[in-house]
Structure formats: structure tokens, C-alpha cells
Image 1 (cartoon, one colour):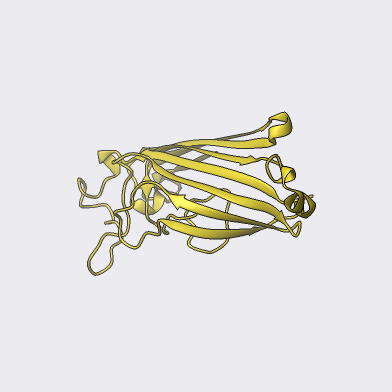
Image 2 (tube, rainbow, N blue to C red):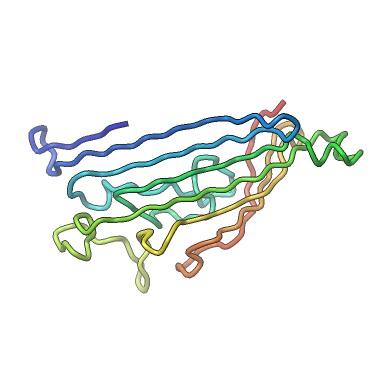
Length: 194
């Protein structure tokens, strides 16, 4: 995916936005299957923060596969990033060994999401007063960069509940010192899973 802006077409910003997403499913025989999504992006040019990569956050109680389920809205921005999401479904490998759970046909699943990114000086409002400042409330900043390392969250859950639901226990591993963050959460997803 490529997006660009140019002064020639009425835009005040001259930039190039590059993004690549690769998805692959791996079948592991009796151990189930793993879905892997690798993604990367880079912005070439100087832009204010609304044009940066504002990483997908989820502050609802639904589990979203392509979002970070314990990240706050507008919490992290980057002008270059790489991420990987690994979602493994054991397809009943453990639960099928327990008679009651085998009868329920529940499926165990685990996931991990890692996001690494950065903001160059060119797009950092701390170095360029002409750029929009990052949002903040009365006391604290609300938007940050990923300069202290990757954002990581992991989850474990049960899928195929009533053949419709997946419930996940999500744990945020990094950036726990930010204001108003949830370290743990329970999320549910509605999905037909036959």
C-alpha cells in the first residue's frame, strides 16, 4: 500500500507513505495451526502527527485480531515501524484429552503481538515547533513514541464456545508506566468456528 501527498495536488505536505503486510497460515498437524501477520511501514517526508502511523488500539471489550487490545487510542505513533502478530489455535490438542471439555469441543488458543517503531527528528514536534504537538490531557501526555523498545502483549484463551465465541485473557508486557493503561484484560470475540 502506497499513499502520497504533494503540493501539486493541493496538499500542504509532500510525503510518501509505504506499508507492507504479509500473512501466512502454518499447519502444525495435531498441534493445530498458526496465523502470522508481519507488517512494516515507513513515511518519507515531514508530516504532522495525524499523518503518522497511529497504531491500531482497542479500548473495547471485544478481542480484535488486527489491533493491540490493551493499547489506548492515540497512545503510540511512528513514522517507521515493524510488527508481528502470531495467533495459534491448538484445535483441541489439550482439551480433547479431558472428557467433559472434549464433549464441549472448546479449542485453546494463544497469541502474541509485538510492535517496534520509531519517530525520526524530522517528524518529532519536540524538534520542530511548526508541527502539531502530541495530544495531552491537563496533566499528562497521551501520545508517545516507541523509543524505549517494542510494545508487547500476549494472550491465552478459549475458542469455539457455543461455536460462536472466543474469550481471551490479555496481558500487556511493556510500557506499563504510561498513564491510564490496563495491564490485564478479558476480551471476547464473536466468530463462527466450525
